[in-house]
Length: 226
Image 1: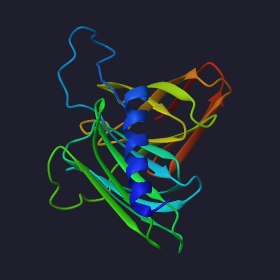
Image 2: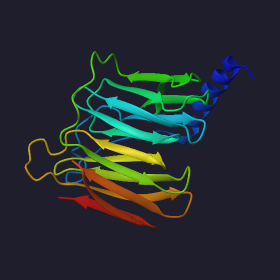
Image 3: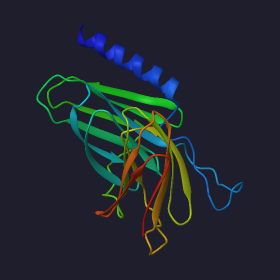
Image 4: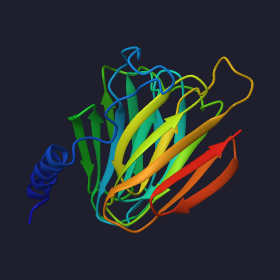
C-alpha cells in the first residue's frame, strides 16, 4: 500500500474510533457544589497512535504550562484544567518508516490529525486557535500515569482543593493537571479511577514535582498526594 493510502486509512480509522469511543475527556465539575458548577472549556486531549511500540518524545503545551512526555504508541494524553489554545509537538525516536500520528481531540470531536512515516519524523497538532509559543515548564508538575489492559476504558475524577474534573479515556494514558491549587500552599491532588470495560486491573502513578505515589487494583482505585 502506498504512503498516501496509509495516510487516508489512518485518518479514516481515527475518525471512526473517535465516533465510537467518545472522547478522552468529556467534562468537569465541582464535587463539593453539585448543581453549581461553572462552565469550562471542553477538555483537550491528544492520542498518539500508529505502529504499536513506536517510541517518541512530545512537548504538550497550553497557554500556562508545558510538559515533556516520553512514551510509545499508543498513548492518550489529557490536560485537566487546561488553558486553551493547546499544542503538541512529537518526534519519533527511531530511524525507520513506522507510522506516528497524533489526533487532537477537543471535547467529543477530532480537531486535527497529523502523521509521519519519516525517519525521526515530527508531528504537530493544535486545538482552539494558534499557540504562538510554548509555555514554560509546568510548576507544579502534576501527572497521573494510568496503565491497564490494552484499550480498556476507564473513568476518572481528578481534583485539587477546589475543582474536580470528570474524564474518560483508554489505557495507557497520562493526565496532566495544569496549575493545581494555584492559590493554595498545600499542593493536594487526588484521583478516583474505575474500569468501564476490558476487565483486569489498573496501575496508577501520581507524580507531583517528582514525588511519586502508586496505587493499583481492580474495582475503584483511589490515589492522592499531599
